[in-house]
Image 1 (cartoon, rainbow, N blue to C red):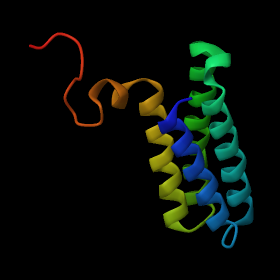
Image 2 (image 1 turned 45 degrees about the vertical axis):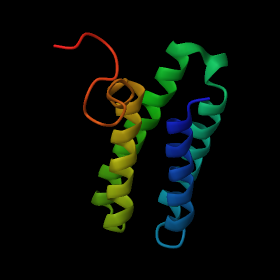
Image 3 (image 1 turned 180 degrees about the horizontal axis):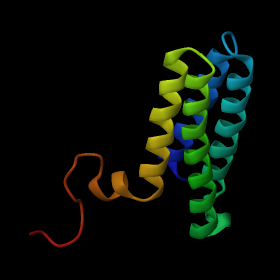
Length: 113
């Protein structure tokens, strides 16, 4: 299980539930993406690294696309920008930027220069 990706998936589901009261289509898309992300994080070992990376990349890019579409359709700004934040976070975690630094900005492993 990948706990950070699972947490981001749960965040997308929570965002979707809150957004349902404002923009129904955006709420449902967030719920579906979040459930997809959460399930992928639970079964990441079965998918393998390549399959897992592809799914997470799709979710990150889809969330960024939702950010642009939400801004263009006058959805609430907070919902649009939270999609942006989650999309960037998923892509950063997927490609190991946060994993390598431990979230502190300094490498946790590797050569020390």
